[in-house]
Image (cartoon, rainbow, N blue to C red; front, side, top):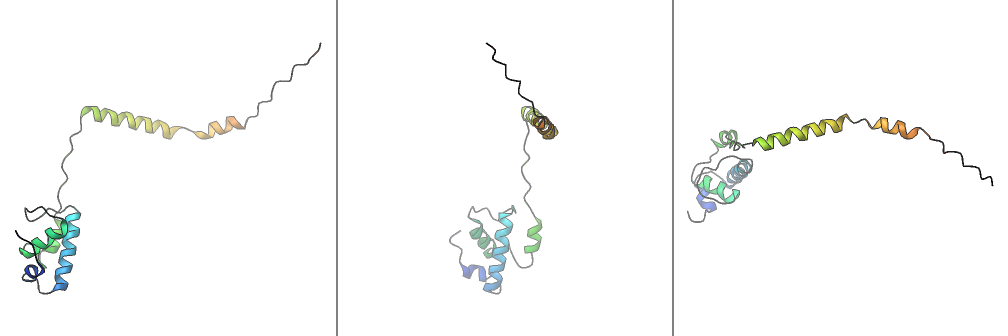
Length: 121
């Protein structure tokens, strides 16, 4: 598809005001993870204008498009990563069980220095 123009988009919507609102809303949807309605790979703004010019995004369907979100790809976790997570959890649990007040109490106890040896000579 050649360049998309404002005139192309205005054939599908009734005013420039409506065009701006549709485009902004669609750009936010695309940036939020909504699937594109065209196969063209452009930045979100150009893609939104292309979708409006093609009649795929309208005042009537913009709210339904907000509900359509792209599902994240499932991530396979290896057994090694799973073991590492468990070990990290154990370390973090032990760290939160540490009681610093015990260390403070021990520091408060004043140990008197040994008496200096007398120098008899």
